Image (cartoon, rainbow, N blue to C red):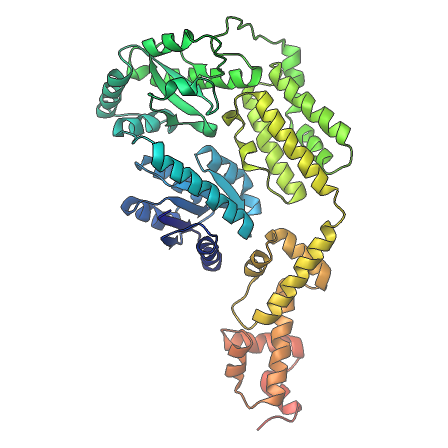
Length: 482
């Protein structure tokens, strides 16, 4: 891997992530740091970046805007969203925009290492077998996925590319990467679509060839026939809707049985299963020992999807709500692959993956040593604070050091110490200052700097607020005034 870009407006967090990348074991030639999306965009214009870690909320240009803007580049980097707890819904949106992974602050070394290894393997594979995407293909991505209006020149370029590769009569097809049609599409250029799916523009002869393959069981979505590039958006929407329905209903692409109508009463009952309260109730089951109820309720939900009682749009929203609620309740991330259900071949494949996660998560929540682990991490944090309180230290740095969620660390620290983080550090600094005032001839401004204050006036104000007298008065009262 040649270059990794870290985009984060908080300097300490940015430097911490950069350091972890350098030490993760994946060879990296250069790690570039940027404080906001605009700086990153300039770097991306000038240099080829393999992997980008980007914060979401930043001044000037945020992470979502950055990811959208870089789509216009010919070879955008594989991207990872660095998300705070409150930014989780935005992290989901970034996954939709093509971000490969997301990782919560404070960033855990093991999590970052695993992501770097996974992306390094993907890059290596890409270098071996990926064909260069032509400019017309890039314009097609923009035209289909970014919902922009194409100019006459761009439409002509798209039309020429389609005529050269697919002919005058063509179709749009959207498929999961695991679809059984994939071995027969090696000679076709795939476009990366939403939720990890692939988009193909196929000529009439190619579609007829696919239809003639015996025993094929594809769950792709195929549009109606097109004869003009101006019909592409219509064809894309048709193919996407049919792909989503094929995923949910397990309707094979070339199946003749396409009677998928569902009674209105069943649709209404399915909609209730996707409501926020219903999703939250199923999330709560993961934290209990009621494994039978967990299996029953979630399997009933997925069965309703397969029967068509839950439409694809509501299913997608319900899974987004699940991920957000799980993070809120258990302060943990869901497996990133669960955020892109339509990258799986069918609902059955997704159900198996989801239930494996739910069973594993439920077993973890039943472990009795959770409180002990938290206590040990807070003790580790206190030791780190005592060694480093004389430096420019803050809670983000310390929570990251012990690999704890920022909000969880804040509450756990106060429960353990009886005071908040700022008060704890302040008391350490003032205690050391009192010792230095009583036992050394150091000047007040020297003592202020030694105990971690970069502003003498702030030190004197804090000292008087805690001790009741100024530093000079304290020294005099202790008989140490020279």
